[in-house]
Length: 102
Image 1 (cartoon, rainbow, N blue to C red):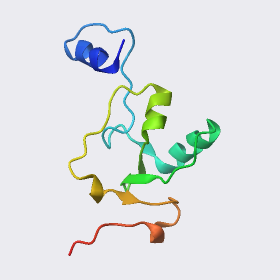
Image 2 (image 1 turned 60 degrees about the vertical axis):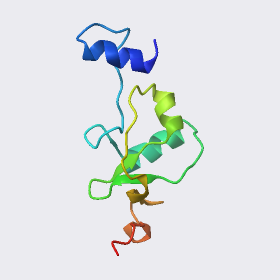
Image 3 (image 1 turned 120 degrees about the vertical axis):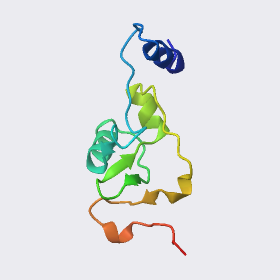
C-alpha cells in the first residue's frame, strides 16, 4: 500500500496494512541530530550535511533517502525552506548558519 493511501485510510478511522510512520515532518516527531547522524553511519548511508530543524532542541531535518529507508509515510511541508539552519556538527554551534534578519 502506498503512503498516501495508508494515511488517508487511518484519517478515516479505518485499519490500514500497518501503522503509518512519521519521523521529522513536525518538531514533535523529529529526531535528535546526534541520533540521526549515528543511524546514518550505522546503516552506512552516504554522509550528507545535516540541516537543523530546531537549533535549540537540536532536531535534524531528515533527508529523503533516510525517510525512504525507514518507510516514513509523512513528509514535512516547509513554507520557506531557506530559513532552515545548517550545522555540520551539533557540538559546534559556531558553524551554524542562520539567514540575516536584515
